[in-house]
Length: 298
Image (cartoon, helix red, strand yellow):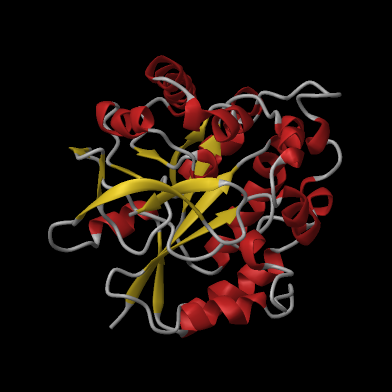
């Protein structure tokens, strides 16, 4: 029986949008695979992530994943020594070309660094304002309201979770977990399905426990060789798989097809789910390979 494996593409930066996204579109088309692109829609302030240097584990992650190699010096200066380019304003044509090529598009965030570094401790008004900025920019670019959301860095708070329902999203993919669910927080049910990322990302496992660019694809393929009934969601990044890790991604695409997976968008994955989704608490918890706590299926 064919199992669905949904491809979720997070686009974090200006460079990732300009360079990584077109490469990924071409590669997916060549492999006859679908995917959903979640765009960062406001300024690229990647350089401000330097504040994370004081967080436990950050230096180790940076050294393992060669951040400069994948993101480039210029990107790492945006928002500090260089002004951050407005991604949505400068790359609207690229974003629309993704939709026009037949791929689903959704919201990642407005300002990636601001959301990832601050949302966990912010109030309802701050959260509403940030999400509305993203919704308004998406609507301006695509001429229609967004129907899907995937939080930057898997960072959420209870106000953001409520907003996924209030804004009328068909689904969100803001969490890490094992299977789709209806989220609850403090016993409050939020009527917007969560489709969590179920597999580790390349940057979480590379150069750790003997995993290298040469064998990381085989490691992931082992994890998908016996999929659960609800399939898998794999998150990739335009800056990584759309850049120097493209050969790894192509190996994964071929391997997944050989395993019998149907490579689908998040919406196709949602439409393929059967039965009533279980309710699960959204909690903040550490995930191997990531710094700090993420929104996780409880």
